[in-house]
Length: 222
Image (tube, rainbow, N blue to C red):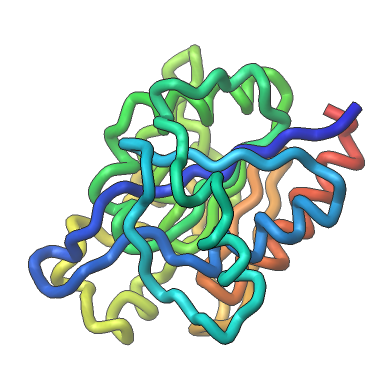
């Protein structure tokens, strides 16, 4: 049976009044390409639906060009309209916009909870793990509690120059929810898998994270 994966994107486009932001295009485009090559059905949705705001687009990257031109990126479904029971995995792509609309969005939380509790894989990369900060399971516990995770680090936020602009520091917020944050070197690929939770540290981690999701779905046959 063909696996189906949902890529979830932010709809927020303002980086604290400093600059424009959105979802970080390669963090969605490279997993989209990898999942499709693996034979998966891939859908794309965003918090508000429609064409989501972009950041980090590189027109020299064929994967990004193809993704940005795709109908599913140009007119994303609203997360509120997504039936989570259709998906074997959800990937929360990053981009600074996620820091504003992912943590408290009820459908970001609902979809992750339902996919996970049905035995699926929850994945997130870079700032995408902001979706996990308030993601609780049906018993009220935080999904990340007691789990090893990767996410954009405090050091990378400082190097990016926006540690004082973002509404919170992602790594610290995950630790406050009971996660064990395992940082790697700045800007280098870092993927951490703990059961059916797979997380990546930064943009360089998006493709290797997607490869691990493919492996997890093959292993579990969910």
